[in-house]
Length: 319
Ligand SMILES: NC(=O)c1ccc[n+]([C@@H]2O[C@H](COP(=O)([O-])OP(=O)(O)OC[C@H]3O[C@@H](n4cnc5c(N)ncnc54)[C@H](OP(=O)(O)O)[C@@H]3O)[C@@H](O)[C@H]2O)c1
Image 1 (cartoon, helix red, strand yellow):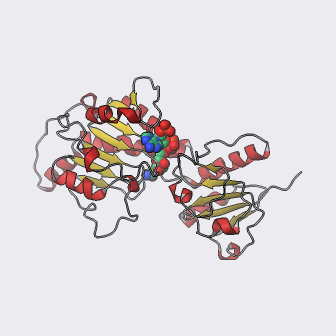
Image 2 (cartoon, protein in one colour):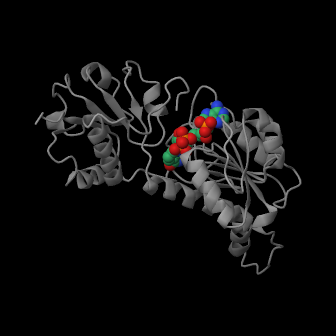
Image 3 (cartoon, protein in one colour):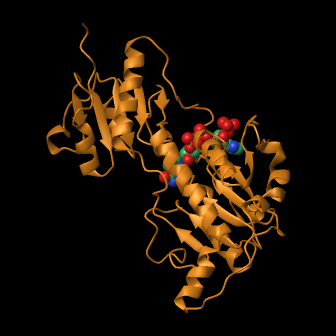
């Protein structure tokens, strides 16, 4: 039997999680873990596979014979812009563990805004007992920008919670019970949207998309008293100065941000303490490292059995 190619790991992940996940992973295959000092100077030529998350700038020069690059996350912007990325398939991480986590976060944020959590917290600080008028989920339209793996799952789960859900993506989707729009339908989509959910990849087309001009096109007289912006795609798609200005001028009524233009979010950022913003530290849907390694093993087995890879990035589209 032909010897299996080693696999390179260049993952800027929590070390304990990687070490724990490596126990029992990649049986019969050498693992070159570049986080380990003993492996750092290893000759990487002639190796077929690399699993990467924010890889070192020289990885692709050193690993000059890669056949597949596996992204450690669903997003690939951390690798697509790297100089020297070889012209080989780049595979995204797609797994129920990640999809479910993201949907939990999206549903939670929509419910926090629907159920006026910030207003109740402010009342609680004053020990002020007062019930606010409460709209129903069905009165609120959640518009999801990015109807891929994550957007579609979140849409279905929001629907179960009773929200009216609509979706927007490059190519129009057919999803039962959910009205969908393509890029040409952006105006109509925004005019219907009370809670705007960003689940877009970061590409040249989506950079800076969530800006003042776009916020101004959202529905103004919805049940929440103003539109809300929720982003768990990538921070590069949002203009944070515009988010702040829109909140302060009442163009937006609230926001939930998991991703930021600069991460970690700088200490001096006003987003941290803004009374209308929920902030989480790019934690909406972390990759489960064990599930990531199992996915990589499945894909390598497919390559070695002559089957096509799954979840391959469209290099021209950038995601
Ligand atoms: N915060 C976190 O913890 C976290 C975790 C995981 C992922 N993410 C982010 O979530 C993103 C989405 O993940 P996914 O697995 O759902 O990706 P996906 O399956 O590739 O879906 C991407 C969606 O965005 C749409 N899209 C891309 N560019 C567009 C454009 N220019 N105009 C309109 N629509 C566009 C795509 O349209 P088509 O359907 O027409 O292709 C697709 O519906 C990732 O790229 C990553 O950045 C964040």
